[in-house]
Length: 125
View (cartoon, rainbow, N blue to C red):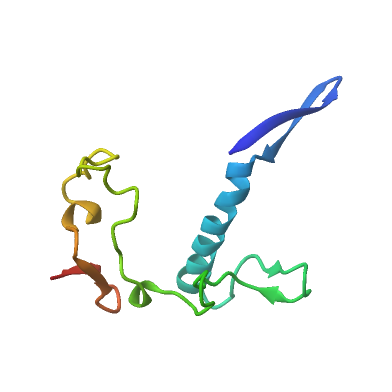
């Protein structure tokens, strides 16, 4: 995620630069910032603002569909098995999910939906 680089030798000084993986994690972190700003910032507002360099406006991250551009939320998606969910012949590529996790509760063909409010995603037959 971070790469340590020396920028001065006497005395030794280092900076930490994001790797390609670290740069791609930015999207995840910005979604978490948006959640924190909404639910934890209080009446004073968010502690940090983000200006989009392309347009110069103060903005925030929103999830959009890569195909149609529409906003995406938990109520707008179906969770389906992907091409990496099982090898030919049905053998899984990844170890089985831990009992009690959402992944262990979802069977092929199940649909997930947001029940609303603070309720968790629930299994729908």
